[in-house]
Image (cartoon, rainbow, N blue to C red; front, side, top):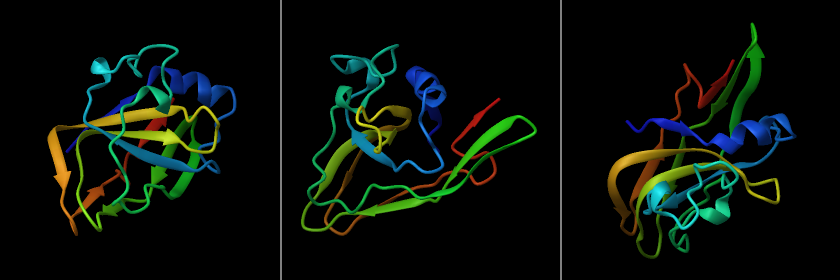
Length: 143
């Protein structure tokens, strides 16, 4: 299972006006490692979607996410997202290895975090790929 890696700039965006409860979150797929990008999106001041080399989504179903719960208990905030299954139709998608979570509502499209699946994945026509978000721990916790 891929491990979530928080983007540094997410902390600033969250404090300065990102609303994880109501903003539309989505995922982006890339086959370029964050450190291989022209502007590494994991370094300070680069945490936006424009710094990610995305794959062609022509044949892929919606990448929009559904928020199940967003709130805090005892001073610990947790974001729960519904699992997402994307499916190709009409041709392949990929290859991709990295999946980024980002805020699609804000104009800058700030990144929240990313997953590394360890090797490149290509979805052929009719294939599906499921992002399984932890219901126990949520996607992210902030203390």
